[in-house]
Structure formats: structure tokens, C-alpha cells
Length: 222
Image 1 (cartoon, one colour):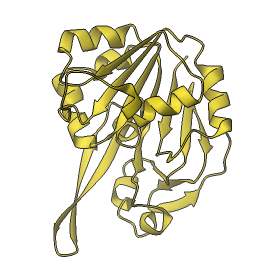
Image 2 (image 1 turned 60 degrees about the vertical axis):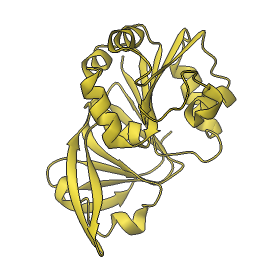
Image 3 (image 1 turned 30 degrees about the vertical axis):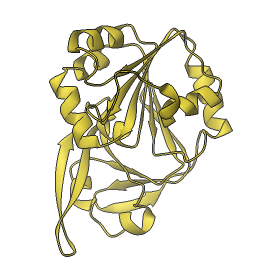
Image 4 (image 1 turned 30 degrees about the horizontal axis):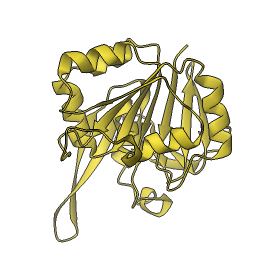
């Protein structure tokens, strides 16, 4: 039974409905393993979990684990793979999705996660990399943007979009429409979540489905 959570971003804490779902789904609380989206962005060898927003969300939700591990370049590749193999929950953190994508490839973590029975969740950049594909918009000059499509881990066969500066007004402008001709795109505003459990997709908060260049707001089902 595979359970995947795709979070946009929560500015304060996880909504109560979402906390209830997480408590139901996360029965094994032995080991939480988090994967950085800025794996070289650290100043000391010591990891302070209080500085990690995603850890704070879970802690405030009273989701407490026996062990906590944070994977970035401070950890050796083989050790990172071993911790993932034994994880109860894997959390792909927010930050820079391209850096995280490169890091997952370099450390060969994607296949390890695909073979895991852990509950897997991602926030913002982490949620992008959980999906089959995602789109990166890059400013190349005065009001000119170029887009690059990246392959994610592909836990589920859809593309995902979440960005702090993008909402329905941006989605409807159509920058995701070309991608939506190839694969369904779930575009999420902030303070939203998707749960994919045994292939069933459930929604909480403002999430839009873009398919074949048509956009529709999804009914909340979580």
C-alpha cells in the first residue's frame, strides 16, 4: 500500500484535517528521513532540526519519531541509501528543485525510494521532484521566460506545479498548457495538499487540474 503526500507550502502549521490523515497513515514512527533541496547550503557539520520548517510542521502535529536523519552532502552516499531503505517516512524538503533533482541523481536515491514501503511526502520543490515531471521557468531577459521540463522520481504519473509566487491567475495564463498536452498537471496554490493512496488522488485546499490545455479547480476531498 503506497501513500504519497504532495504539499505546496504551509506558512504556519499543517491544517487539522491534514494532521488527522497523517496520523492515520503513519503508524510506523521509527525513522523519519528528510532530503535537502539545498544539499550544499550549510555552515556547520551540526544539523539543527528546529531550523527545518518541514520538521517543525510534523513536530507541531505531534508526529514524533524515534530517529531523525537529514540527507545532504554532509552524509555519505551509502549511508544515505541505507537510512532511506529503513525509513518509516521519507520527506523531500522544499528549496531549489533543480539542486535536489541533481542531488537525487548523484546519490542514486530515486530507485531506493521507489522500492521503499515508507510513507513519502514532499513540500514545494520536494513535491515537484516526487512527480513524474515538472516545469522550471527561467527569466532569460526583459520579460522573457524560457521553460525546461525535468523528470522527477515518478511516484505517480502526473506533473506537479507549486510555487510561492504562482496561483490561479498565473496558471490560467497557460505556461503549463504545452506540458498538459503530454501529461496531466496538478497545479497547487499555497496551503494545499494532495494525497495519493493506492492510486486514488485526494485534494485539500486550492488545487487545479490542467489537462489538454483546459484548467479546472478540483473539489476538496480530504
